[in-house]
Image (cartoon, rainbow, N blue to C red):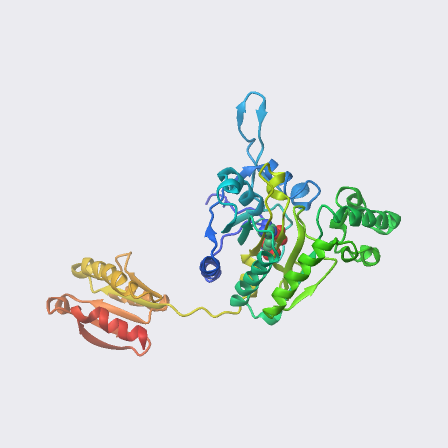
Length: 431
Ligand code: HAM
């Protein structure tokens, strides 16, 4: 035997039942987002690395430690050399796509949803992978509080569809704007600098590069200094405060239990004003299941026209870890043959039943023999696969225009005319 090749650490194969759950969560998200008027957006897996350097930010974990670079980029001219990477998130790419398509001029308000794999070179642990899946929604071209509120309501409705809302905690904050945040940043920097000896190496370095990120440090030793540091709420300008209050009023009116947390910052630099995160019990250290916020400066920073925007993304693997939802059982039917004389008929009937029963929209699976097994072997396989019903195609019965329908649990069987077979099975599925 040759040496086995194994998957990379942090990259997984996902099988049923988790694969089915993830599939349903993604499909469910798409359906729900369409109801709110969002359009699907398919984004590339590979982007120029500079896109994330200019959006997510140079002083963030994603840029400093977690990028997956691919190959060496491509050379368009002898002097132009671009580095490519696997996308770590979707927001910057959605903003790039919006600019490239010229929506700013033609049709500025756009609502998109997307889903798919994201890549971050993080240390794998429960709920944290190097390749994971997100479902996300973005509104570009809307500045007013109802856009933030709609996104928060949508995020909450989506999560609550899959996991009990009592186990979720929604935290919201405002990070201010280019008018009011600089004063907060300076005050924070000064406060952290005066206590720098009590901070870890990383926080000490970040006092200069990205002081807001210090507030997110989880180390015990940094906690007292962080607790004593100033918080943003005292620094918000009048219009940021009014915006934040309007968002809070709207979501509270809809009975969304939002907690204001003036220490909430995000791991990406593009945010302005509203930010939010939903945490859940049962996820271990990686307890955020979905998060987002407003990013009014991003489109402009990427070379587009000034465009207010906001959005969120949900980590699907984390949502699957939380979900207690029992999936409806699939009704499985096996179409067996008694030997070579009826194999072709059994195959054809399986095809026909898939078409006829599938059209009803129910969750059914029709299987047939792919290994030329004996009838006994096929029955064993049907049982192992959890089939509720096996249809046995025998030569004699087929000649008479009939088939045997066997109830696998009751171990009872009846003969059914072929023309009434689909109807008979519909009765079994329904009952
Ligand atoms: P984020 O907070 O970096 O935001 O990621 C959103 C969600 O993705 C997290 O809450 C988490 O559930 C999931 N996630 C992140 N990293 C991992 C990982 N390594 N393994 C498994 N799940 C993970 C964003 O990505 C922003 N683009 C959200 C956004 C959209 N903001 C505005 N629009």
